[in-house]
Length: 355
Ligand SMILES: [Zn+2]
Figure (tube, rainbow, N blue to C red):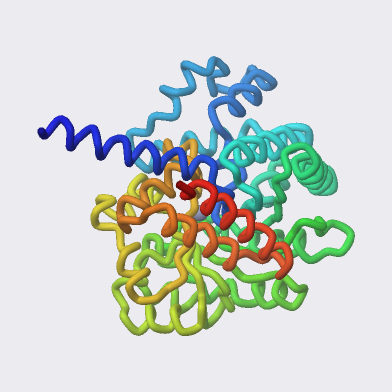
């Protein structure tokens, strides 16, 4: 009997995975360089043989096995070092879109850190043209719509904030696909309020505010992001669970959280998946979206994050379809475009569940 029970559960589980694989989705929190899969890294490494990153895909699997967070940062930076020319930027962006399209991602807001590239001497105009060229090609060839979030690498200080807001608001440079402005990197020792003038300028230029907050520090960082940076969505917001008033505020004001469960474990922001506060967010009525952050680096992808969410929230197909709706609702798409993807989600789900 135990065998039968196990088999039954496995089949149901397998069905849910197949459902997720075909479910049309939106991805709102995924980083450009952090999306470089071993396949993409291998191509980039082959172009730059002087790099210490292996170009052999099998060796790359070992290379991407992290011993701790410091090791992850080291590997991440070695991948950043492979992006040296606008053509590298184009290749990375276009191939990331291909990986998203394979997962039935119809729309993604990709977080790009232009400062990492411009400080390394990549021509800023060439950089913008490369991402835009990849965006248009991806939409035409894969049907995946990309939009950009330019984020400040917090650890690089106010100089990087100035550079990022300049690139995001200068009419001669600002790419057509840019919709939002963010803030990433470590939170400890990088208080959010100091970035207020830069967010003010980005918001005045029509960009939406989506800082990371409450990933590795307490709920006060999320309050800071709301109060000082005008946050419309919160990247992670994991520690919000420690503050019932904050949860109520997020729910009441429909401020979504971009939840990335596996990332939170990989970076040790949360100890185990079982301890992840996603359930508390849902119970408090907060609009939860599921995202992948730096998927290949954390050994995950968006489909796997949906499977994790299904397990933690005990969701069936309709529950998963609702999560997919949440991401579309929380996106910066216009009304008709949101309606189109949601209709596609509903049609897919109804067809799947039809007897
Ligand atoms: Zn992130």
